Length: 230
Image (cartoon, rainbow, N blue to C red; front, top):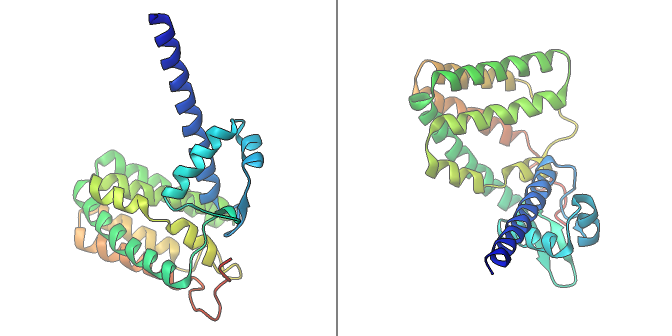
């Protein structure tokens, strides 16, 4: 009897692990921008991709739908999320407010080790920019923003920030013809870092607000230019 109970518990843990892995794997894929907005996702393709059962993938898709990464509609199936211009503007405005507050807290609370990690990330970004490696620069950019969030040591703000789907918005509305990295981007990151390094919360908040606002203004949020919502 005990053995059967242990076996059932082990099976449940394994199932939970597979569902978590499928969820994290697909979430990462969605955030990478490799699947276009409004694209249909089929269970058959996803189960092969992540080597899980249909029921496991279905559970992962339900969770992703609840969190807003995908939509599920009758006769349309599951599709990657797309955003109207108004939705995109709201999300980016919220990001600007939350991430600025996190930067201010990071200036107060970052440890010496966390500051050094940010310094190394900026150095990597500078080197990537110098050799024209856009992918490496983008990875460094994402890492830096995550480092600022963690260095804030403010769990409530971080949770609110993590619910925003701004990476999907940024990818839907990015201007593919624009220079990357954007002119001034590296200098804006350095200004944020300097404010955190010198323990200046007001300057960190202002520098992050300027940086995020500049990134938002570089997007194609004008209705006449924006890509269609499918």
